[in-house]
Amino acid sequence: DCVVYWMRMEDLRVSDNRALAQASAKAHQEQIPLITLFVLSPQDYLAHDRGARRIDFTLRNLENIKASLARLHIPLYITSHSPRTSLPAYVHTLLKEWNSSHLFANIEYEVDELRRDIKVCELAHKDGKVASIFVHDKCVISPGEVRTKEGRGYTVYSPFLRAWLPQVEGFSLREDERAKMTICWPAGEDVAKQMLDRFLHTSARTSQLGATDPLADGAKAPSKSPDKESRVGKYKDARDRVDADTTSRLSPYLAAGVISARECIRATLELSRSGKVDASRETGVGRWVQEIAWRDFYMHVLALFPRVSMGRPFQEKFAVVRWETNAHLQAWKDGRTGVPIVDAAMRQAREMGWMHNRVRMVSAMFLAKDLMIDWRLGEKHFMEVLIDGDLASNNGGWQWSASTGVKADPTGDYIRRFVPELAKVRGADIHKPPPALADKLGYPRPLVKHEEARERAIRRYKNPGAE
Ligand code: FAD
Image (cartoon, rainbow, N blue to C red; front, top):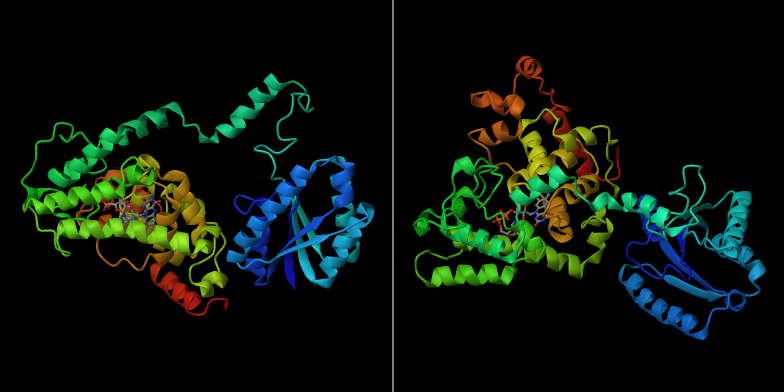
């Protein structure tokens, strides 16, 4: 058995290639190999006036693709066929020879090509053995998705553009959102340097928790704290507290390259050389440097094991873990799971586009272990909502997140800040509101019972593929 991705002259790439991505997901799901097929069709090239330069360019690109696919352990089978009229039958024969269960390809919109593909579909359908899936990939917005009021295709560019733009403007922010993000995360290299300064030389105040303007506490005109009192000075002990603003909040700037990680390291070296702080591995400075090393670590993993950026688990054995349906996914995204710390985290992400590391781990664990929902859906949501979304760190965080254990919000102030329904709850109830209180405050009951969910997760991770 195998899945076949039929690559054509117009989709000579591995990344952001929809048919290839879907074929790869199918092969992964069915646990069968994926083969890429490329059929050279000289008669088609003649019929369509393809020049020698273009054909040569195709062949040179194929060489590259072959190497990229080989790195992913996907073979590329290049063959040639004439006459073109029998090409569908030829492809069909290959599929049968390979005992292929699925054929994936990106749609080519030219009439000859559409006819050819329809023929391939018909043959596959008659045979009943191969499912053929042709997908839109070539355009930003697929043909047919923007139409005139009368439902026809546009024939004039300007009105087409007016209809087309709103569809690609998924990337533009609403004005109020933009204003909020601009306050939370002002742009610019100077700001990034001030943030670094704020971290190295000023102290954390609880009142700054979830502060909208991270520089409001004086880093703009830094009133420096004694170095031991600075955020970095206290980082070793305070970094896991989510109920205070104790970390650097540099991740959006580092992720966007507004400040380099090397500059951060240089600044810490200067600070330790000055003798004002101890920079050994176990101190604040030392611990912070180790966090920067995490960033490098995940980037190295991504560079050296590219499969992690193609939706593959790092540990292959977990490829077959059985996930629950996604019924609770939306509640998790909305911060309505009934578990206060998870809900505070998810609402902080919505509100600020950022979360503290500890609660990223808590909410990631909750999705993948308590709710038993495929972690890749969580990874995707984080990328969509976080301003520091970074493939390597995010993927690493999701894949490597171990159990968290430590109490991150002993005061409950973090939960009170982001889950206003619970703002007036005092004492231990803040972490586990009794059902009657939760109902009264309009706060949801927990989606799952933690103990039962824990056992289910242990069972499924221990023996992936079973039950
Ligand atoms: P500080 O504690 O001040 O650390 C300084 C810098 O070190 C950070 O800005 C970051 O660049 C790096 N760093 C710290 N911890 C980590 C870590 N665990 N992994 C990688 N780099 C680290 N970080 C991102 O930048 N982008 C992401 O998309 C992202 N997704 C994550 C998803 C999950 C599930 C988890 C558990 C972690 C994720 N992280 C991500 C890592 C970490 O949570 C953030 O980098 C950190 O919370 C940012 O806050 P800070 O700048 O105040 O960090």
